[in-house]
Image 1 (tube, one colour):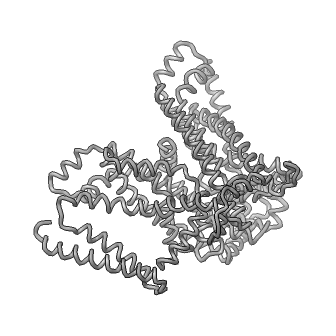
Image 2: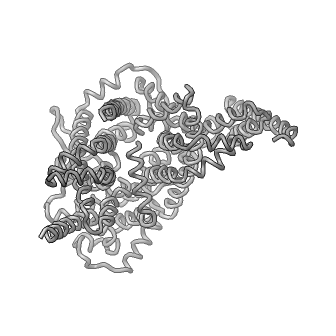
Length: 348
Length: 290
């Protein structure tokens, strides 16, 4: 660092000035709408050169600070462009008549009032809530039973764990189509009509597929919780003459209460966001009679409803308003989760 | 007597376990077996082995791989490139940011950045996806770097979206790395960036595995983000997007759809068979820490 300080100074200056120049020049091209194709690469070169110039900047006092800035920059920049800016824009657009490309005027809460007068949307919220609650209970119960099964000293439990977890590796789109085949071509021999035809049975089908995909994963978390219970506690219970069910309900379950909280909220939030399986399995179709209206998208859950409103029906502002509501619901759920897990920790 | 009762119980439990395993694995069996059949045999007897022939499998494979909507090799290539580069960049940028945050955790700005990252983890993709597309389109047009329907654009988006969770898990780990190590290096004349790359980064291997598995499972199987940013009919498609585009064009052609499904799940199954333990542990750790 000391020996070549003069050349380093020069390098740093050249990079900084050159970088600033190409950055400014490319921005001038941008604002003057020149359309020159080299303005993009020029911008990137400018940014890289400035970062390199800062890195070589001959200072010992501020070097650590410069490194901190350089290290934080890439992630903060991508994060701001892909999350923060679209989030702010999205909330803003939900109060306008945005078409996905531009907007002409503010409409206040009109999008929000429109969506609550649409029976299809209220139906979607309703079935999403039912789906979430049923799933939360079923996935957790089944996963916990599977975890008990796999920790009970049966032979080849490693194989069983891997086998039950396997469906979780596959994306919702692919497994949605696989199960569509199972329901429409295999199970039809037992059920006569496909389960996917009627709205009620189709919802059951979605739940079955979801449990199939998710229970193995939640099981793994329960297994971790169960194996972390200290052996001497279980031994003490055995010496005191506790039978297996007493051990289960009075020792095992209370001792893994925090695991239950984790799994409950994990299933809750992921069930809320459920989109892929819904799209691939039923596509949201199914008839239903609701609020005096005939609905054609009986199995369309909230996430799919948002997508269809914006992308298929081209109503971007309304879709965005629905998405903001979706975000508020999820944020509330997460806040409750934080509350519960914090109060638990205090108790312990 | 007790031993015998125990053995019997263990036997019953094992049988229950096997029955559940058969139920869980049955759809996979159907996919594999029916990719070896012609459409007529699949519809007539979807469960039986009747009509299974290796020649038919080759025919189905050929029809699917060369299909213009599916384009298997191209989709696989896009998926691999997007996943691998996103994971590498997330690991690098994420650990750099997490190190800065955890080494300044008494300062207000670092705490603020950390809190923003944590809070952003509850943001569902749906609420940002529509403005994201318009931002990418407008910003890309403005600066002359196309962001929509391009691989660098989607990698950029994955770095932004995966950043929060990556930083969260890595920061928790780096806080546990003793600061003495860094001080010693610093006294020996090591620069801060040298300390990070030579001392901290090698120590992060276990937690990097966790982060990479969590992000990898998500990015590889993700459908909504690539379908919005790359488009269903775009130049590049990831595997889930290609499957969706393919099935949309071949309603009820189960011989082709199931072969496509098989092709789409095989890469993940192979990786799982190789790194089963790491994947399962990574998923558990991610859940418990998240």
